[in-house]
Image (tube, rainbow, N blue to C red; front, top):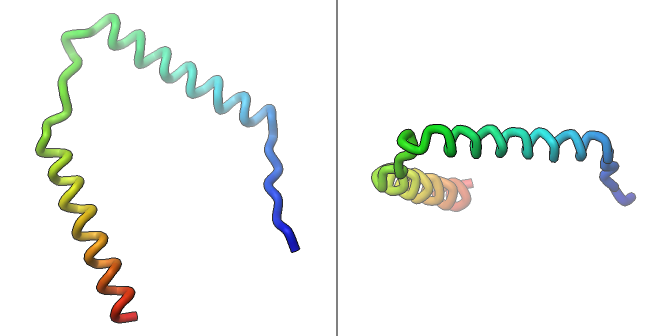
Length: 66
């Protein structure tokens, strides 16, 4: 039996408009307060990489043990 997804155009349109409104809000904030924009510290990316590495190691270990 085949499963199909039904897409509501009204719901999808509402989702797209909400995303657009959110992006406009962010754009307005950036334009009105450019001094508040700061780069993301490199340490955060290092921490994300470390967490991903540990998660992958755990996943591999679970696959081997399971």
